[in-house]
Length: 332
Image 1 (cartoon, one colour):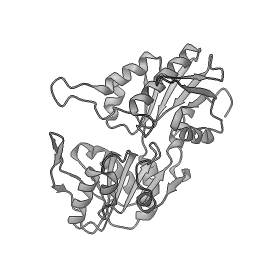
Image 2 (tube, rainbow, N blue to C red):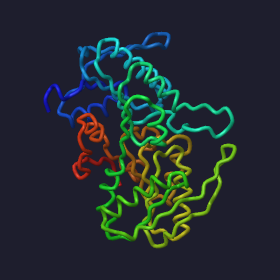
Image 3 (cartoon, one colour):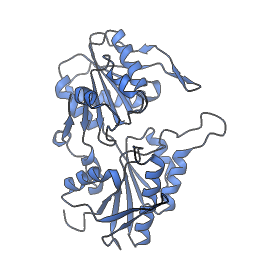
Image 4 (cartoon, rainbow, N blue to C red):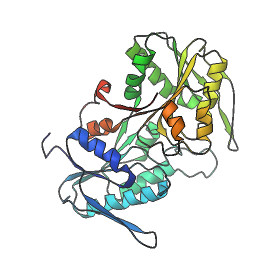
């Protein structure tokens, strides 16, 4: 790939490791920048490499961790994107492995806010030309919120590639932990059926009702008896939703349950929920490091799939890389 074809690639803060993986796939190096903290809690970031007239990309995953919350990371990314435009960058692309506030994309109560739309307006205000994100909660809402170019990446091919060799030849089922995710889970079922050469993969979803912050509904709409079941979701937060589906599948006769979720936030009681024997294995992407998951639990149950090549492919403007060539980390 020539110099002209490779954009300058920056990676902020805790996303530097992920950005380095993208750069490695591209056969390039991360561009240089400076990040400074001030005594009053304010901060600044500036490019050290010249960006004038260049196509520039910035990697930053907007999850909260022990040192910076999602709001802080969002603010830092926006300020740096604005600084790049002020420094003369011709086009600026935001590469966001995990996009904060993507779950709040519609009003469920009178006068509810729409943070997905507000976040989009902030990115546009600092001059972002293209927004690249991975497995947002509602792809249609993501695309509708932004007026700039959007690229929605999906980790599904990588997960299917990881699972298909181990599951081929078994009786299989794919579940969504709620009706709202049925379309996502059915697309996963179709991809897994093709990879395994199996047209008899069961499909279904869990009943889920939410009222006053409490989740209810125990009915499983699927026949999973004697099958290895894959429960598919876009993210795992406390793990409660996945555990409900796993227990229901076990009660219905499933022989094994694998939880697949792109973003592993693992907040609240996630360690307790995911340690439950109803779940055999948890497969996530490296869009969010599993910082809060207990080490023993991670070593015993967790598999982390590298999705950096998806972002590299998006920057090249080419096809999604072959899943068989994508590295898989972790246990399992």
